[in-house]
Length: 611
Image 1 (cartoon, rainbow, N blue to C red):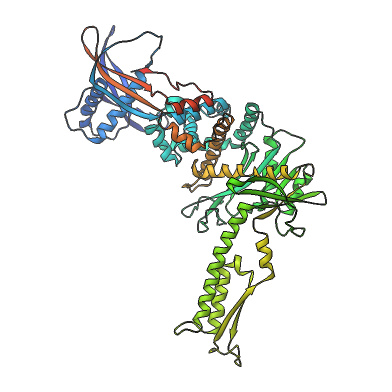
Image 2 (image 1 turned 120 degrees about the horizontal axis):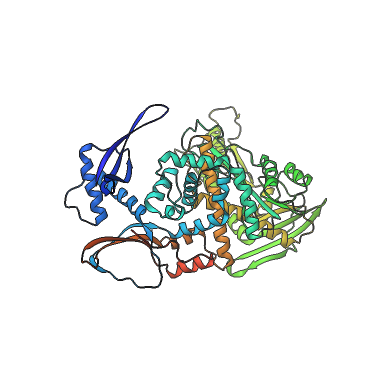
């Protein structure tokens, strides 16, 4: 076994490329010949190291120990090359019930090439059930890139991160390519090109998943929940015209943003996503999203859109009504009636958890308004208000006491300026107070030496109204056929889309986004949306079987189900030593078995292979 150098000439450019092959001499009927064992590619090593590399590969293949110090680069290349040869020469072990005994040197037994399998197996099973491989082939994407696309999507579920991190995870830590089939030798840019190819067929993929999801799960598609979130970038993002400054959901107003809009149904299945500029106004996105949604879902007689206050403008609600959509939304602005919290009916109560939801119905001009009050929300808002109010009043008291102490600010102009800044900083509570700075008597206000002698404050009339309204909100709908409880129950389901955004931000690598080019930014975000399709199917099926754990918990449980290679030395019938390697899957534990059975999966993800 030795290494030979070959030269290849490009037919068009006539440029010459050098690459290496691992070969061995064999005897044939036609005389001695060279047999290619492995193409090593263009390795950046000196010719003097060829012999050491070939020898080390042979040592690994035969299970010999090396007593010579080996360059770390050569050692890494040798291990990867041996691993590739193992895969090429491996064959499935047929388990026919017959026992197989060997004379084994137990001191030579080693476990190597351990890779995670459990989470990848669950996600890959959903990917196969959705038929995404066949669909992407029909869209003109080659099978080579489809393996990379699946790795990108499942990587977001198992080890979320950038394309660079996904490449390392797929090739060094995971058994994903044992499930999907190993692509040809790929470089880092291949993952980018695979993502680019996926994003080109984004709309076709979403329409297909809507149809496929409805067939698999018999989705009703009567309720649609719409909301937006955004992602920020570090850097200038000069190559992305849609990266703009706006109101960040993560309070990162110092960074440029892009916005993601998402529509999900009542079971949390995504229906359509769209990417907007970072400064996109929420209220101007609804009509665009709903028009695209029409292409993805079937035409039903009754369809209701559920939105939050930021999108529920009069224009948007009017547009929904004109296009035969019902709506349930949080009322935007002031209440169209006087709030009265007497004689309210209870729609939900749990004394142990401190939950109590009360509602009161008002009907006006073919619309229903539901005044709601939540005990938990009331306590939360009271706590926030009281903490801010305490800080605000402490500051006022501090500056008031300073008027009578040495070396403290007493200038009337300066005190007025300080109070103005306080009102700006604590604006949510300051607007309910009247604060007066009392100047010295018998002096003109234009006098620069004018001093303040007192600071007085009192509540405005709106203060008591605000306190009475804490914990309350108003729902608005044109579904007059629904009861108060039904309207509130449907609105509360809006948390499904909030959960979707939370999953994408935390479990699915939506943030951070390190790309600078527009199409790469949107590709990164769409991969997270596609990963959420798989996540929601997994969680939905587990819920149907009484398992309410989140994907992050399931992923942690399955992380201990691995794929590993067992190597050992043994003797054959002629008492001759040989090296054996078997690629096996670790036995599933009880928790693994419960999850696999809930998802109707085989308990043996991959067969055994003898190498």
